[in-house]
Amino acid sequence: MPNITYPGARRPDRTRSVDACGVRIAVYEWGAPESPPLLLVHGGFDFAGTFDVFAPMLADGGWRVVSWDHRGHGDSEHAALYSWSADMRDAMAVLASTTDGPVAIVGHSKGGNLMLSVCGAIPERVVGFVNIDGMPSPGPHPDMAEHEADILAMQADRMTSWLDHRRRTHELVRKPGTLEDLARRRGRMNPLLSQEWLQYLVTIGARKDADGWRWKIDPTLRFGGFGPWRHQWSVRQLAELTVPFLGMIGTIHEDMGWGAVADDLRPHLPTGGRLEVFEDTGHFIHIEHPRRVADLVLEFLT
Amino acid sequence: MTTTLTHGRIALALHQLRDGDGRALLLLHELGGASPSTVPDEVVAWPGPVHALDFSGHGASGLARGGGYHPEILMADADAAIAHLGEATVVGWGLGGYVALMLAGGRPEAVRGAVIADGRGLAGVAEPGPLQAAPPGPPATTTPDPLAIVEMENDLRPPEYAVMFVDLATHGSGLDAPISVTATERPPWLEAVLAAPGVTVAPSIGEALARYAG
Image (cartoon, rainbow over all chains, first blue to last red; front, side):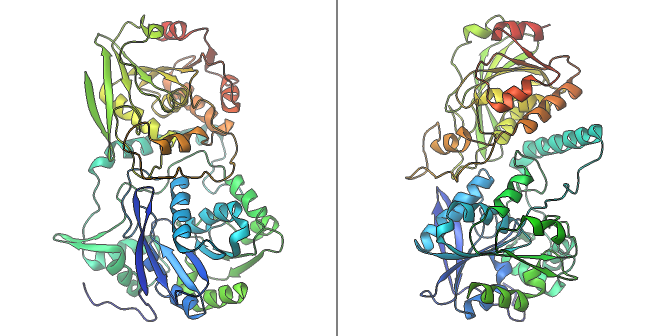
């Protein structure tokens, strides 16, 4: 393993695994085991190692930070199938393995959206919920076409492309490359993050095979797709939350983001909920401004 | 005769119930069910070959350890059968009926008519409910997978989502009525589907198939 370090990055203090209905989930902890637990939940196509700078700040602030690689991501097992409810079940399995008492929750992107449902399901156990740009967009869906015929054509393309992808899933493998290649490729999705940070991530989120480095993430996973979930349901879940809530959002739109805009979100915040806006910041707020985000989280959870 | 198809990491069993010439009839079973071993009486008049697919986690097909089942994945199961069979007419019971509708929308050029019949798993739910609990105990080793049943007994089927598949089928297939409904159970998604152009009610599966057999 190449000795690549990053300023402030600290690997977890403890690692373990959880059996979630037969799928092995890799779990990581930072901070004293006797400290109060805080679940830190990564986004789609990420992994817990992306918290290597941010998580230690929360741990040093007095929390037992527990994160995990979602199924098919990082060092968790590649599953036969993936779904929102399976991710929820995995999250509940990690929570059950951590504590049967109260818990704080911080989720980024898909992890934040996923935790909206968890907070709605077990509000009595959640002492506070921080959502880092994983809130639904209450405005019109960003890729919604104007005319019905265009919408139908877009839906047909999306469906065909997804079905074609499913026909190929048994033969898909990730493309190998040098460590720098992988960091550059990742940089296309994370244009605001430094190459130095992305190269550090490769050493955790990728493995070195005989023919080069490959991201560990399951090659059958892909962006896009379609499904029955209506984004207005997420908007409703957000508004109906009964746990203390802090949302964070940037002002620069990135492809990996959810397209939410602060002014659209404000009317849909839960009672007493707070929204922090980060100017000139993209989707990965906790990576761009780890200290500022950690301080806000620690203050909010006090 | 049974053919094994590969869908991702799951081996699917496609059973040929009857050989023949012409367009295939593909049968899709209900939630928690499995393919019949002989041609059901309701479809015996079909002029061509008859095949039946066991969905993931069902019948002689493989299990998805740790679950993650949803109707869209079953549509892709059925699409693996279409890739093998070519053009087909599809009959689905219960959940299989919903999947038949989705497949008719997803592959409108290959599905020459889909019939939605009564059976387990027809309803789904129109709106999200409380978090589903996982069944206790170790992962399943035999079908039907209890996780498949938990995940698809109450999966989300908002009416406008179901209607999207009708619209795709109608526009893409060139058929006047690519969807036929014999089901008497009428969950909200099916009521909405029945109100859409391109959907017709048939008194029996046999009569629905007679319209597509030409």
